[in-house]
Length: 594
Image 1 (cartoon, rainbow, N blue to C red):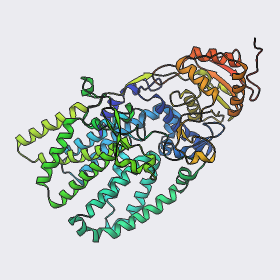
Image 2: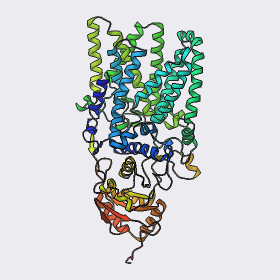
Image 3: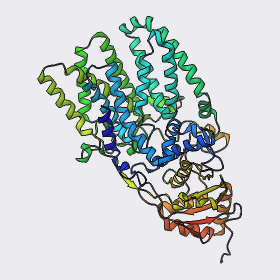
């Protein structure tokens, strides 16, 4: 099973493995660049013993609260040797591959240990979850949401809590797992805790559950107390940084109503699948990385039939489990639809849904509704494994019918490899260290355009410098991160935003790079640029030969014309063009004709 899971993961990630230093996931170029930065920061963190939850390297001169972002400190630290010696590009595709294969394998082990007798049944459930449309969708750049293995291990230890003689050990382990899970995928850990608590609550409210509660409750409560002490101690500082640290904000930087599941998407086929390749896929997701449902009508039909057949043959205790799973599936299905119903790509604003009541609730206000679907996918995998396990002991005709039904339901959603495209290579100006002649140590330098969610090359060049572990480092303005709307007290209470608050010169660079817009530059624009460059404390700006955008390369010629109009002719250095900047002095006003 481990070999099959790993082979399937390599198949899905094959485009990145073919050219890891040049290729990038085509549907989410920026998130891969962001995670490469986070992984490289792990090398810098260990080398300089700096703060893992706040950095001044991004968004100069303000910095970034990494506890409010997907900093993935666990991955960054554990894989720091690989990042240092092989580069963050290799580390990224390695973790992504291990996440997909590990998710399938851990859930195989979970099912085999707790719910089914047959290895084949456990394998079907594990592979369904590990390579579900949702996880493969998140493989477009998300190292956090592909870590389904973490949720499986947490769920495993939750089910061990009733062990009377091991409450101390189980509490300590669960506390350590929660600490690790907060770093890997805090939002997924919240979903796991919510689902586990609801499942156990439903189970213990049943007649069989009430009989077990008297014996199970003392060790469970003691173990949870230990978990709270361990996790609370280890997470005290990161939680403080998250809820009350510098540059905090409320909620998330993404719109809940946009990142909600379309009702029809559950029964549709995903685009990057066998069915999608045949033209049967549907484009109903917020974007290619958040296509979390798309289970297909055949699998939904099989799930309903499986529940009915399992219920008829189940013991009283198994029926309680099936009931709890069914209630959870319905609850998380409703949560995934968000605050307003979406149907065939259109929001039905006149139809509010229960999530509208949770928009301002703590934790719920930071979770995107569309991602609750992954809990539904786990339940589908569990029920399908139970179904296969039950019918493997039946007559040959029943086994054959079961096999045909499973293949018919799963084959259409079998994934295709991730799409990739080429991105700009690292400039020799960066890799050779020539940049050190143009900026002081930990001074501010940027490539063009400034980093934002659709252009992260400047973060990449900084990341590769951090990964190599040299003593010298530069800071960059702006960046791709979640931060406050403003830097006043009001920003702490408003919903977040993607990137730093815009400045006029930043917008000039962006419009030139994205759409080729080069306005006439006057001393008014030069004066504003002088203020903005001084605010950012920029000492040097450079322009590589190619610039990565969200769907290909950006407009270098337009940026060259614009920056030359602002700052004058550049200095050619190796494979880039460099403008030295004297903060508060450049750009110098030019004589203008009436």
